Image 1 (cartoon, rainbow, N blue to C red):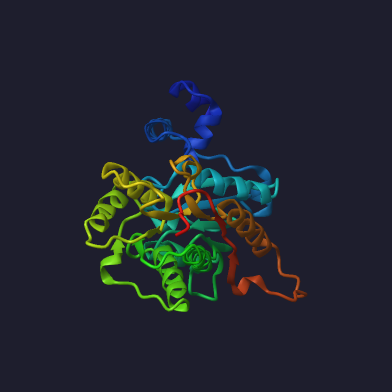
Image 2 (cartoon, rainbow, N blue to C red; image 1 turned 90 degrees about the vertical axis):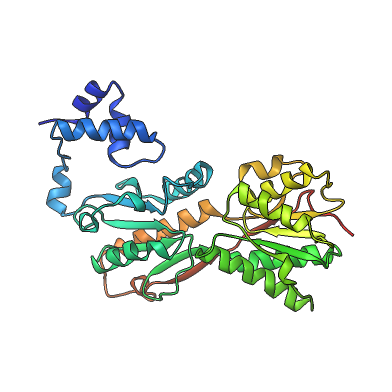
Length: 338
């Protein structure tokens, strides 16, 4: 029988690398993963399930699925999520990581292969996969994207409340001309963050001119391009909220290119608190998204869902429900007091 050690010998890598590649670990480079998968197919490799798995009729595997994993999911986001998951993961279970976009046949996602599934979702494009998992009867928790389905367990950051708190802070600093660079259309996070922005303005009796409403796509480049449009206005805003830190970094660079000083002439607030946010010049005020906490709480919820029903539960988590994890405003130096 062919083993992963045989494949490792042919591929010239460690058996650990082979194992990670065959399990879809995104930390393995795509070219390495493709090479190993090709060799495994040529050698007719068949995974060997342990005797324990066969006897217990369990795979002892939890699948973590990301949307668009090969198209821009940041390494830091992925690492933080996995860190939180491993903190809560039972030692009896192994974690495999996959990209939803790479799945060719949903029929391969079954209870024989996974005891439970976590979906780190970005948009409604993931719904076909999510509802396949639900119909297959596999315990499921959706992370990161607010899902309006009480029948699916959902753990998500409270994006709306976080943005509202940040804008309240900006307004308290004297800002009245506030603009927004929205996130990618179709993403629930973009909708929730804009809603928090609007709720703060409404509560303070402020309006949002159409010229101050710009749409990006969460990329640095879109932040740069959109910010140039805002700078060309007869009366530019005094503060710009960007729906993620990447767009904020792009927007700040547009200001540098036009000799606009930050925060003296224009202030900025981002969202996510990526590792680079504290190293921008000036350091970016932003809203920290608790990715590790979401991963940890989601995993604990999933493990509870995977336990056999004993008929004595005051809260049946199998009915789903939504849990909001609070964000945190990180005040740094990109917001001026007027």
